[in-house]
Image (cartoon, rainbow, N blue to C red; front, side):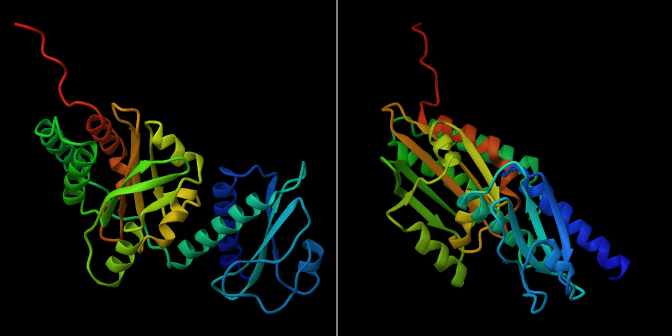
Length: 287
């Protein structure tokens, strides 16, 4: 193995360790070359026939092993090690998904992050939204949230947006829009037209309590994995909360490769949604 290949493997190991350790408790991430004798000593698996991408190769309860082929053709196996206990099934699924996403990033199938948002564009979107809401004091909540979505989507070139109202375990679609043509637009439109989506992760539940979230297609979170079926989504921002009748709402906007990085609009979108869920003006004192 040449030094350049060794350097590349170490960078890959550090990337995996840094990313996964933020979500799963690990003791170490080690690497073994997929060569006769060396791989067997490191934890099992075949020493031939390396796949083009990562694949689970089977481990004991305290180790997750993932095979990868380096750009120079060298096969390696990453071992995610926890000496203090075993990994459960969900942790194994999450680890493999994260490594898959990182593999796509390294190989370029998940592109670089989009261009940064211009601060002036975000400020302009927020200010114009607040003016829009001033004219919608008596409008239904869904119309006020739609005004937020339309203004930000236009100013920030969002690929699509979706507004939902919370039920028991799902969000019921109240409004949605797609701003792209072609195959990807049709795919995104089909997803956004679904009558409901399930609330399956803690971050979405927190959004419905008045919070917000951002995600990037390569970060390994549940919010990011949801974009896998959302028509080529790259970045996502969502915000929500309670209206005056104690109903919970969420607005989600998805950006594609042509959209600037929506993560930088999190604070502005969250603020606009909170205003939309209440009244834009405080009561005026009597004269």
